Image (cartoon, rainbow, N blue to C red):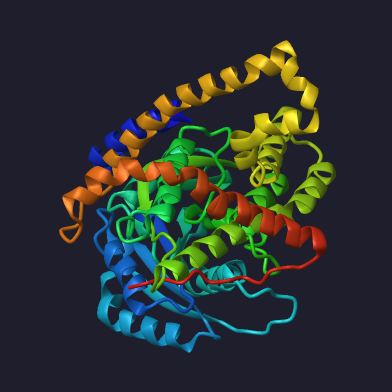
Length: 437
């Protein structure tokens, strides 16, 4: 992952300085392209998604070719009121500015992001394609969280990749999800976890064999329409929409990286303890993605004609990522000790005598790579806010002594919680992560 993160870092730097509009103008049909941006709104403060829409207005790609869809929920009336105010303020800056209201208590639906995406995307297609006559073959649709700020060159870069790819109707596009919006405000333990998450997400862009769309991503509207949109009876939605497309379209679907950041809020609240709870609950919701495994395994056996190697590698990595989530921490921290606890005579063998030294050497080597990762992450971070002291920045590397404790409480334990609840049939409901102004 260190090598992948290093490669991604330099590719992101190169992408950020490229004049993508000059590249886009090389295509004769670039003016036909239209981008739908669904901003998923629940009960977040209006300032949060207002900041997101204002960032969209600063795109280098012509905003007249961008349609903003504020996807609100009927169960959160404040979201709709805030969306209406935002439309009056910024609506004229875009080609279209729609507000959708996802009804509550629809039979068979689960409250959450996925069902809202399904409603908003169908409404956008009905209005923009069926009524206004936009060409669906030249349209993309982006699922964007309320707090996620896209890089100003995102849609210019996306347009180039869309037009340049002959398989554009079998693609997702994924930016680097980094939690930079409030990285200096959150407590040190959660900052450590989010720092490692940032590095992981950056590194994944250079690992196309492992890349699956996550959180904020784009697809062609034609593909989403073809596969039947997002499912309405699930909590995990990003992996679900990818594997739904992957199996229905014969295994030809891939995720293409866009080496630009999408800066989001890390889980935060009004106090340190509430921030810890918020972060824990967010990680638990992510770990609930394990609930999709039975469906994906069923798809694996029911969809013939897919490359044996392709689908097996996909499923193997999926199983590893989900099933090892709760146990990785224990393997790294107490894995060696468990062997001697189970079999006390093991430590008197040659391997038992040398194993602690071997594991110590491995951890020392990984420390070197950790330093490299931290340098990459700090170089990617936005400039230090004026209200953050230089001492806090200089001392921040020392926060990583908290990693063993933070890793347990904000990674391993939420994973165990989610997996245990699933095993016992104690299903969770979609919990909207609290956002702070």
